[in-house]
Image 1 (cartoon, rainbow, N blue to C red):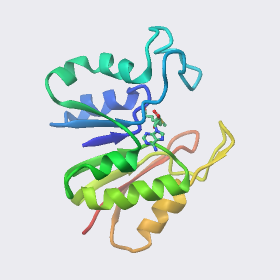
Image 2: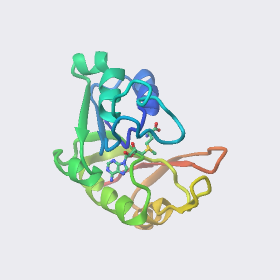
Image 3: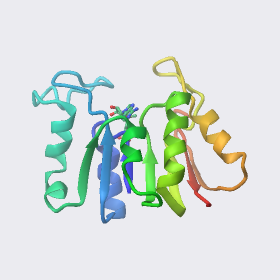
Image 4: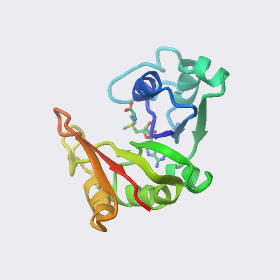
Length: 170
Ligand SMILES: C[S@@+](CC[C@H](N)C(=O)[O-])C[C@H]1O[C@@H](n2cnc3c(N)ncnc32)[C@H](O)[C@@H]1O
């Protein structure tokens, strides 16, 4: 499986502990250097390291046993490097503008297996906390109108940052 957009690895930890995937690919631009934390947090500033090193330390055990693999780069470029029909499950939570999500979806439809699952985080039109429009709804809905794929869960979040979970049909 892959988590696309890892940030502090909070959800990576939940996924690994609850699902125990045979391989977990952590894909992110890892652009934040020392002191460049976001969301008002100071996790890696406190350690005087950057985001990538923070994740490497946090998941040192899993990296050591070969289960956790970091991939640094733009999501659609990194995803393109995998074989077609590779992933059972992808949690997509990287860039949230329409063009980026559209590019991620275009690649993912090749890389996820038939009956594989994509979980789209932040399936919402607007981020009220940063005053930013989100393109996730439009990009995902354009994928869904084919009628081919199956919505299996809709996960409500109190701030409206909901998830939609889709089983991909080929
Ligand atoms: C919303 S956070 C991810 C939160 C994480 N999934 C969680 O639940 O704990 C978004 C992350 O995506 C990364 N990101 C943003 N745009 C990206 C892109 N185009 N390609 C790869 N990573 C990206 C950012 O560096 C950031 O770490």
